[in-house]
Length: 339
Image (cartoon, rainbow, N blue to C red; front, side):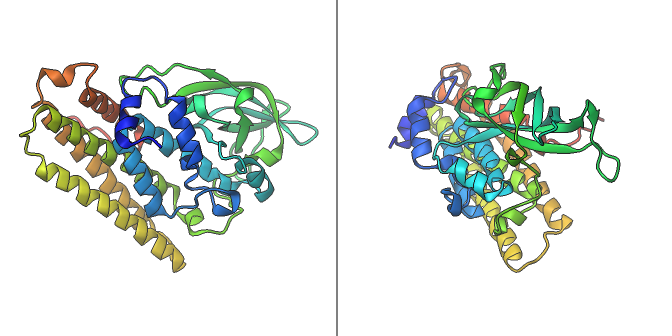
């Protein structure tokens, strides 16, 4: 098992997570933290899983982001029929990943299968996935299938990695080792058994009932806090006398606040309470404001580090680029109001 220091050294300036780190991740089933025990996963509670994501994001931003998005995709194990989930996750290397966008079509066939075609973007962890997940519009004879309200029907599908074409087109300044690529699918036939609907579950667990907005907010927030903590560590290596005591306290306090939200949500659901919109907004507003505050604080610190922090081979530069690439995710961006 690699130490945190060794992991950071191996992740420095790489464009893909090294195979020996992927081997460790699979051995420890870290991509299956949200997969129920009944399927061979770790079945962690929300606080436990957030702690794992924070720790790995603190080691390296690309590692944490890849683990977060891929383990989040493996959450869909709960949406699959039990026999399919058992079949797939009996393998410790099973890893889902894909795109939340609607990028293609699923043409219904006479035998009940679907023919998938399309292009999807921003599939994190693409080189390391065993299966891609995708959202597609359902069609029949080339025409959209409509639900009772007249809206186009959307369904999610799982296809083996070897049936998709990976397009390595990530060009951002940071998160270079996340393997966030596009993928295309052409005339791939998929059984309905390998499709699912986001809010239909075949397991009976508290985590099934956590609103997706809260799950996304807290898991992504763990990444930003972890990267901010790593940035602080690297900053004092350049300027040991920087006064970062209050910054580090803020990080620790807000991480604990995120854990407390996780506990509160599970407690409410264990008591069969409904998570109302006010609680969801409270968590989202907390996370959005924190990312904004962290971003301004990191910029203020970066201004004090001097030319060494701009060297493209420096650790602090990599963390800086990773963090501000991650902030471009749409989840916490406020509506800009210029005056």
